[in-house]
Length: 126
Image 1 (cartoon, rainbow, N blue to C red):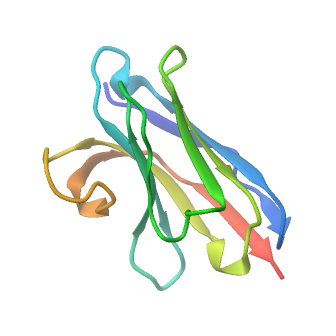
Image 2: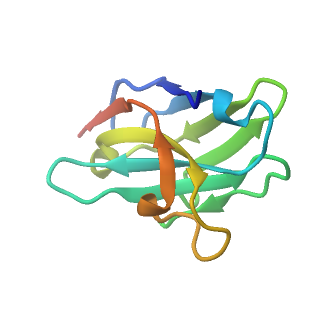
């Protein structure tokens, strides 16, 4: 059974840091893309960063570049997102997503992912 469990969301002040983690049993016996997707109130879902679990060069969206670091621990099947210099505009529900439905195209398209966690809330105050 596919399972993605996020943790690490919290309320922080602007400039602070958080580490989000996603325990991903979906890739215990296989490999594929796994991503963080976020959705702010009243906005569409947007890709933050993604990585292929077996060889891990991360793809970072514009919101992540220079501030967030994505990594995947193959031994623990855990996706981690180190978020630094957080801004109020980073406030959103952050979802872990996996099981991409296609093998080509951009990897930060939320609609291409078929398995989702419940999300973890990140709130950044000014």
